[in-house]
Length: 195
Image (cartoon, rainbow, N blue to C red; front, side):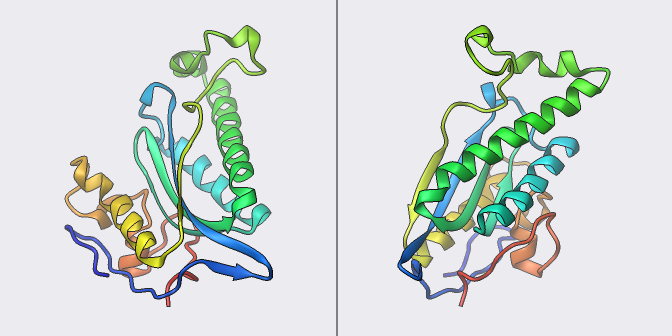
């Protein structure tokens, strides 16, 4: 399949779902959105925390990280893992991104102002005062390589569609540059799903 759109990389694959021992590993296309769609994820401090946590949890859960795009108010990840682990991965990763971001902002002189949009009205009933994420995640199970290609293409073209850049490879918080030119993108990309 050849990706379409300005600056979009190309991918070729023939694999489908991976079987490791008796346990099936599936591709997952995941989207997480910030609370009230606050545009914080492309801030350098937050995007660094986010990518650092991907690296940490990838080692902890041994998932394959196949692609990503971080937009101002949401992210899309494409990963391959065991179906039984996906909820734990997302819960742990989002929780730690929140904790590290909130701690960083509290330590800054502007912490209270920066956290104001994330204050939970029901904080007295919850274990935490702030929430960086909307509840839940959107995820799709991907069983065929062609579906992974389509999702990867959609992710990479997201900044172009939103008119943030002219070419997918120009968006700094995306795996598009890695696929197009094998340039570093702040987190290791697995290509096991390719031929």
